[in-house]
Image 1 (cartoon, rainbow, N blue to C red):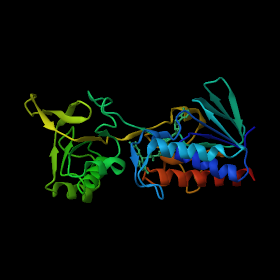
Image 2 (image 1 turned 60 degrees about the vertical axis):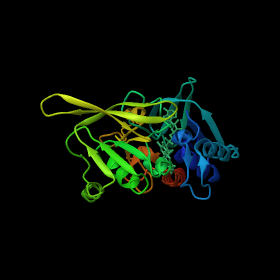
Image 3 (image 1 turned 30 degrees about the horizontal axis):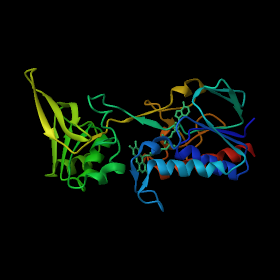
Length: 308
Ligand SMILES: Cc1cc2nc3c(=O)[nH]c(=O)nc-3n(C[C@H](O)[C@H](O)[C@H](O)COP(=O)(O)OP(=O)(O)OC[C@H]3O[C@@H](n4cnc5c(N)ncnc54)[C@H](O)[C@@H]3O)c2cc1C
């Protein structure tokens, strides 16, 4: 039986594994994708001491780090169910094995919501992005579109307004749904920003990278217009979905969207189950590598205290 089973091979899970291994715990870390979301990030320029590192290089460095701990077993696999019976955690993997642990750290991360627009998946990483904090700098003095109307879309516009030359915000309804009024005021007073209401991006076009988008605007009389705009980048900011489907039977408290509620020690509402990284809510709404890693370290420390 492992002292701790960590699910997720992203920054949160790997950081938890480093700390737990160094606490001399008997660790199993399981994940289906090395580096998690980091691995599909083009370039990372905000990770201290490693400027301009590619997502794949950082993922490799993360995995190499935990390979050196003999008390940390790494399993590249998908978890298909998690159960807790009495105080033991049972984690089933696709290889048919049931792995038993005294404690569990959930670091499954999230997936960005896709807009399902024609051309979206083809141009992901080639002009289509889901993260302005990460990829915004590639659009200095360029023309970009942000799709979405919530707080994250508004924040994305504000962020890009310091970088891009022109920003279109395409929203489905006639107004934004985000409630950060100060941020919204900044947008409407910014001459670089053009809000396109009652509209959908129906296609993203290009050859090797994004070159234009088609926007369909619904008119009050039920008709619609379509126009094509030249474009360098499209940011899709319509929210993210936590990978919490596996957690249904555990009785863990989550919010309406399925993000796990935690306290400042990364404890969930269920004893000996901890959570870290993007799948959580209640610690920070900044979803970044450095935050996920900090939470992983805290979760491992809390698990160690529980085992003692
Ligand atoms: C396009 C993009 C660019 C970004 N760029 C930056 C940046 O430049 N700088 C920055 O700080 N942050 C950036 N971020 C944010 C950063 O990637 C995340 O905050 C961070 O990766 C969260 O780490 P995590 O460990 O919580 O989750 P993740 O990185 O998502 O890792 C989750 C892990 O759980 C595993 N998993 C999920 N379900 C299962 C399952 N059923 N079985 C087994 N394993 C499972 C996954 O395979 C993965 O290994 C970016 C995000 C995106 C989307």
